[in-house]
Image (cartoon, rainbow, N blue to C red; front, side, top):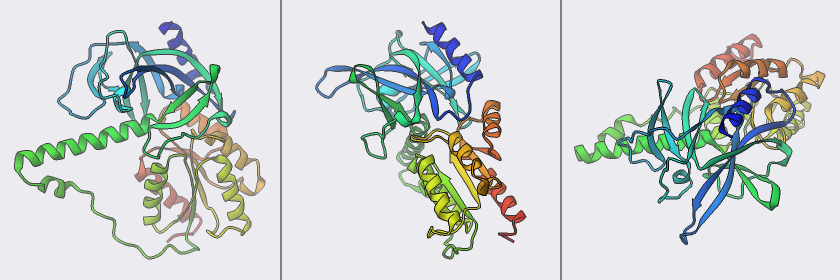
Length: 338
């Protein structure tokens, strides 16, 4: 079963189609520990494009980290990879790792991690239109839900958010350990990121960027960075919403001014980034509008995917320096900035 699943992952990675408003996810099971002591087999999924392989449980070497969810580190063909206990991440404090479990090795945002699951089931092809919003708060690691057979729900996990939260906890753990050793909090004070200096209110005639992502975390972080450059930022949470914002802005009916560039996520409910790019390019009014995919996938297939869809290029998520440099060059050519 595991070998067939791995072959399917490889085939899908090689044959990934552009612009169908669907995606393939790998479905897996987690045995959740309920507060009353009972166990429940939950069904989850992650986008197969981010999956490199699925392996039987290797030897995991423990780390000194006290961050819940970090099970340790394992070696795969000479490469050390952190192992994440997904049950612990989702709140099952008593969850332990057993030799019968499997690890899904994923790669995104130039990072690689192994996610411990109780079993992989199948690869499922899903239309973005079928993905429901999660019935949880914004801090949840669940990015969407899907109603499947037997009236069960499959929960789609946001791996990037999980890793980001673990990294924040790990940093806080280091700060706390240092404070305990030294008896003061000077380390934390020295390593805080300074607040950006205040800027004047962004002018309506400043360059406008439409930022599209279903993650509020990404929208908030990137929009603050772009606004600090003196640029206007318009926000949308999916492709359909983005088309509406774009049409209002370009027709002069919007209150936020024109759009001079679009940065869109690849994976979004209702309409994904590839379909959004094609929809924008189908309108002759927008055939020259620069569009960039903002993706956690930094491989060659992602570049080809962006080009085939009609995008001008792509940014790897969190590569803020490249984003700002590219946009500045574009705005200079248009004489929107000096």
